[in-house]
Length: 128
Image 1 (cartoon, rainbow, N blue to C red):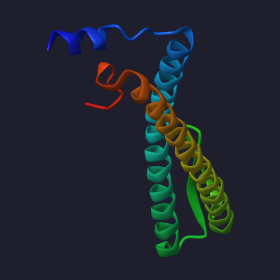
Image 2: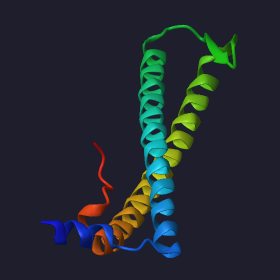
Image 3: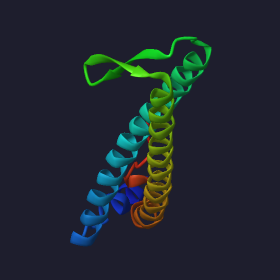
Image 4: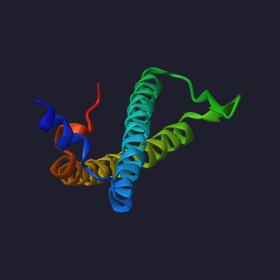
């Protein structure tokens, strides 16, 4: 038993190992940021979809449209166009974020293989 513990504690952490650990930590932080950004983008998409549906139901030619913190009276057709443009931009952003998340996950998995290969049970890279 003591021999196993001695082997675990004898693993030397090189500069390269420390760089890999730091890189994994940064990637893990970015992964969580991306999850939050993706969640926000999906909520925005849902809100834009709801706004578009509400606009279809209205019979007014001029509607209130929020620009920043103020509401402006804008023709319904223009609001429809703006909402569609916003949905397109948001969808592209969401797609970009999801691709970046996949890339980050792939890099994290590669680093996990390297670090677990060297440190085995001496390091924990899993979420609690």
